[in-house]
Length: 152
Image (cartoon, rainbow, N blue to C red):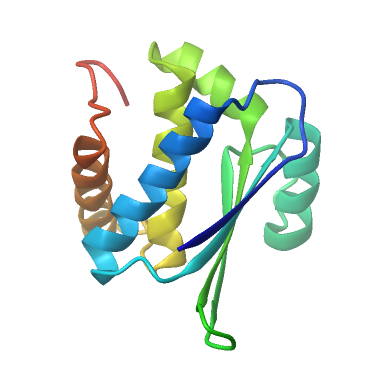
């Protein structure tokens, strides 16, 4: 498993504990869905300004969002490149406060959520949303980050 983390923001601190949780979230997502971890994934942590620009450029939505997923499924090289995850650290902090849970939980959840997008899942219809949410919950439980009552 190759994981590249590029911190391009200064709104939240990305310490070693955060990095390890994000790597664990990726590993557990891969194990649940693929049964293997021999993939390459990159995570870029940006601020709201940068994610808004990316959201506008790639989705034609001119506002900030929490996470963007860019599947690659590139089979060239020794390790297949699954894709890129872009997280707004600033938005993650806002949401962690709004939902009343830790920043680490929010960052882990956004990583897991994006991993399932990279692996082909979506949540545009209720049936697909339920499948994706169930997988996300399993991974979050596997890494020991549980939802509190009232979390969305």
